[in-house]
Length: 207
Image (cartoon, rainbow, N blue to C red; front, side, top):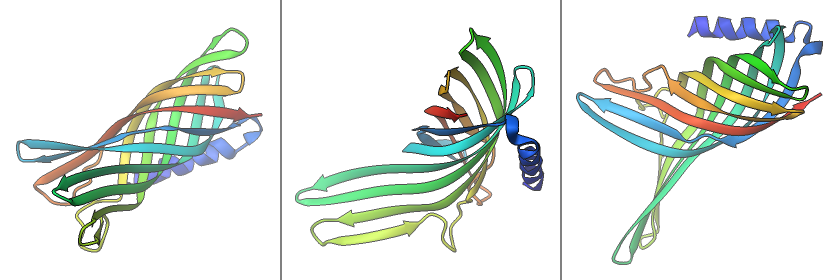
């Protein structure tokens, strides 16, 4: 991960050096996440609903080519309830993540005010928190499970391969893509856990 940190640091230096040409954008959108766990030959998956908001700087490097560095806050959640007789058990999962995407983009002008671009690059992802709350209404009990506690097998740091496309019209941007986790997030030798998911969003470019 030291190499990843160096890449991000170099990208930040390039981006902010002479940043008069860089464009600042604000973004928000929808980003569900699937966590796939493999134990031996058995696979299982868990889905979370996700939303994100953040900012990015995009600096032109050459004609039609730019480098974008951003910071996004992502919130994932899922809630399920089961009822047996009069007892209802509710399980709610929540996760908060910071994403740092470093993306190279290739743009093609569509007239004087629109542009279609493709982007690709790494995203460093760090989970700030993760929790499962299990509550029951009859006995009025509530239990919290910290995903990243002292004895947890879960890793908070992930590296995601990110790619997608964006359509920009004047100062508005519609974008979407896919993220796939490149690291095993389970510290156990016999268990592998990775994340993946689509994302779609809207952006506004500040000039």
